[in-house]
Length: 400
Image (tube, rainbow, N blue to C red):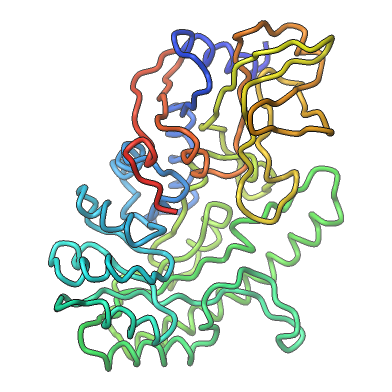
């Protein structure tokens, strides 16, 4: 029996009393992935990206481990909810225009002390001030650095279009703008190198592309390490007592942690290890989050149909954004249909061994987005469901 076949047997036994569709998290894999992330971080704390988890119970679980500290959230509404739920160090990783929540933040000392917001434009400061509605609390601010690699005099750009602040002088000017404005305090710098941390460098069947990605990422790491150090130095000249410098992502933990100016790593997808993280040479993890769909039809030889399954991930549309049939091994989509909203035909010889009501296990392309499809996660240890916990959706929250 292969390791994957053994996993399938465990998951089927653990959930035999549960009807699919359902989602699980394998706690042995989850904890092993967390430990590997800590090893790669080399002693620097890891701030957990909540968008990659979207389950309070699992955020609490990983933060109970020595070496994990703080949450990186994705909306202001989520940030306030987490702070009210007892999370006392929440970094909002994206700028917000949520005026109502800014009014709450600036009127509540506990929230203002727990939540740090992201800024890369003076207009965002004005929006916050206009939203205060009498609130006088000082707003903790983090400045985001654009990490993109610019080549040929800026004519070519590699990396996500995030912050407009690219140079040390631009970030320092933004720090001065915050310092001049009453009611705000710069406490940190964030720089997410998605083109390094979030792009696989070992694409199956694409050796030339993989080589090109590795060369690009090596150049990007060198350029960013030098520029990030200069940015931190420039900002410290304005704000000597920075609380943190955040960088990295699941795919670049060890590289970013090696930079002396970085004080903490941001990562989260490495806990679940979705399919987009299979193609990395820098690390390997164990798939921890899966979902099961029930077999509801047997249209013919070598074919079964499962209920639902059309859960594409965000990003540029393509086959790499689709969930992948994982267990039993050897199933594949019908190219004429793919994963469907209500039904999904699956092809392959393993289909002939599946009966009506059996479970087919899938992996999502991305991490936390799976939790937008399910109210609960069944936590599996060995071949037993030890606990069932709500996702954000299960607690009545769909923040984005």
